[in-house]
Image (cartoon, rainbow, N blue to C red; front, side, top):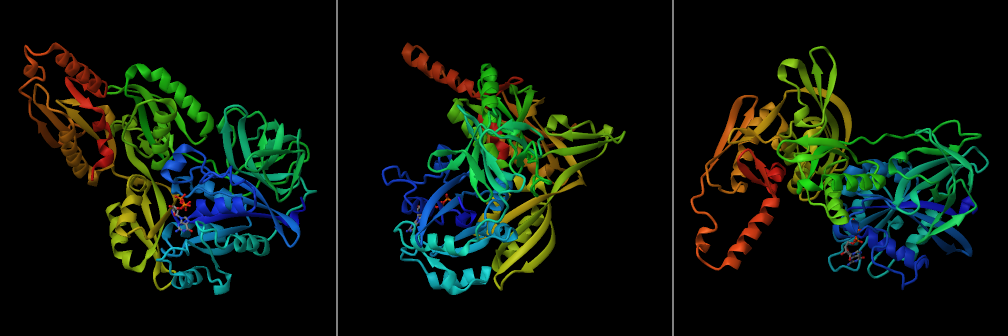
Length: 597
Ligand SMILES: Nc1nc2c(ncn2[C@@H]2O[C@H](COP(=O)(O)OP(=O)(O)OP(=O)(O)O)[C@@H](O)[C@H]2O)c(=O)[nH]1
């Protein structure tokens, strides 16, 4: 394919502004899919994605479009929309020359769009603004167009009016893609330089690598090398991505496609890595490669302790197709054998948990998530702390360091006060405040990662009524006064409930956790003391009163089958209970920490 007739683009949109619907329309209009094949939201092909209405993994799809009697190849590259996956977004954007900026004409510009828009502008992408959902009675295209002009500085006539639902403006969008987005540049004769921007696990064919060629040409059967991992492979199959994969003999600069080369494990493939030839390699890797590191750690345990091996097998399978998931075995006195896992963020953690339950039928308990701290030991050794149990004795370290991020928040002027207040509550320090327009403010904070990963984004959205976008990058470690907070039930430490918290917040945390546990731990035949402690110092206490009656009492002398049923029910309930000392603790209690508000 002549490079002049290729266009690579992505779609940037705030959640629910109609990205998937519009993408489906583009596929239909270009006959990439027949109406019969058309399935709503074709691009989101994981069940989970569809239900959550979010695109978790990016994919690419090729369309052919006839424009002025010439056939063009349009590669639509899908981008995930959540900050947990921001690195993947940046790589997808780096694979494009242009982006459709979709704005709901009844909502106006919203915050989530903005950080991706800036990424796109940062990569010099041509932006095509599209006002979507103009069929809605509440649509106000004129006002929203003003906002768009304000934001990106385009001309009014550059803005396309569309409705994915009604199929309005689809042809205009496709024409604009051809007319306005530049053709890819690059030299097909140069040494091969292709960027991996995604990978898909296929249990039959192994890992499929999705790439964009910047320079050079790749042929089926070539000996290739991934520059950053240093691994070498044979290009067993290369091809383009239609609705199905279409194998090719050769592909060159400007193209987007997939590669299959017998890779069995997702971990071997790093998004952002460069593919080149073993012979005649390119001089340099494509810039921007990063090794993604887990940000959040938590224990995952089988609810039924006999299912440990099964859980291990499931985790191994999950890891085959999710390179960012890391784990190692761990034991807990309260929960038995399980795994300490590293995740990209809280959403990633929820997804893993849900996939374990759905795809592998495992019921699991997840313990208090934590970031990675570092202890600087008295002998200057650095010890990594991924779990409260890793926390060394206070006499053995000089101090603890915690990861800090530079957080950028963009919001409307009226929410600046509440946003600053929230950030201060989260131990943030404001570093900068810039008015982007008369109504849009960019705030920069330095803030502990631990405070951001939990519920920060939800809180931010609530106080700004959805009108705030958050982006953050790791700055490094800073000394912090962190302590390990333990929870005891009748004097017995429940290791799975321990957490590493800042000293200034420990009291509040302990108090709220004890209160919450009091609600969750059922009354038993004896009194239960719930205590929170730092070292030997008790900082909070609640009591669960003893229960007087026993459940069978009311069946005394009664119907035996009813009695059996009750016992049966109790036994089932027990499976979800954990024994800590002499106290039975329901599974929800281990998750209580996540819902302390
Ligand atoms: N009236 C109207 N509704 C639309 C239009 N496009 C999409 N919708 C509706 O808006 C909602 C969101 O559409 P999606 O296409 O799922 O939006 P999205 O941006 O892909 O959403 P996420 O994948 O959750 O980010 C759905 O209920 C659609 O039916 C449109 O042009 N007009």
